[in-house]
Length: 336
Image (cartoon, rainbow, N blue to C red; front, side, top):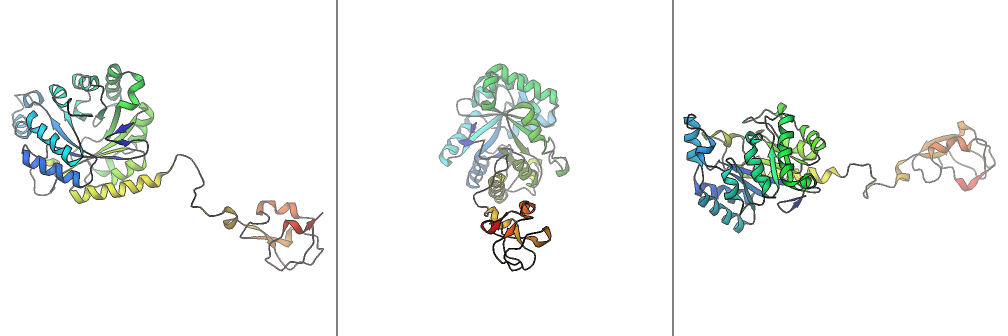
């Protein structure tokens, strides 16, 4: 599967989740987008929604905040244009189903938030576009994930699932403690659903991301900010600053390069096995014509003549050459 021009079989995709860290400021959103692109992110993600369809009128405080942080369709279009100039992919989480149609003309990928894994309308709407869908699974049961996957299957067909669906292991806490990162959920979900499974990070540091890459996650998503301290909005505190994102990408790619294949293969760089294994040598000085006993033989590197495992085959053989202690016994000088 290709995602943001990367092959998920061999590469890692790094997503900088700006979300609403721009706090409703378009210029600030543009600055964060530029910074994420310069830091090496493959894709930058925002959130798109209609406030009154996201938070109810009775949830006064939340509705006020999401209204303040919301970007209009026109403002998002400006971010899309800037991303194109910066040569970085941009996509968004439609937190309300009406934003699927708004995002569709400019988005190659749709992201479903953990909180919307039971929101059938938005999942089906995103899947109907026939574009890849990424679903986060924070605070979701297996039965709820099963249902979300089934909705996607209904829209795109079972055969297309591996090329159109990415599941993200995620812990829905802000921040989440390291000992509850549950990174082993990555291979578990891969085996259960047969699709690529990434890791959406809410840990303050990068350890869980590195572990996820080592366990096979081809997509790593982290929150992104320009400054994590001294901010009122809680997402900044668990976000990665530019230098932290650069380090995550550099180290993550080195970890990915070290993984190799799920097999045991002798690597091209390895030494000649004969040089590191032990062969049979004389345990003491031996005269020409001597008939070998087990006590006449011991082992030392290299194994360029007779392997240590063949020592008993030499017992009873007559040597056609005198040996000093420690000399290799040669196949060509044995009789009998």
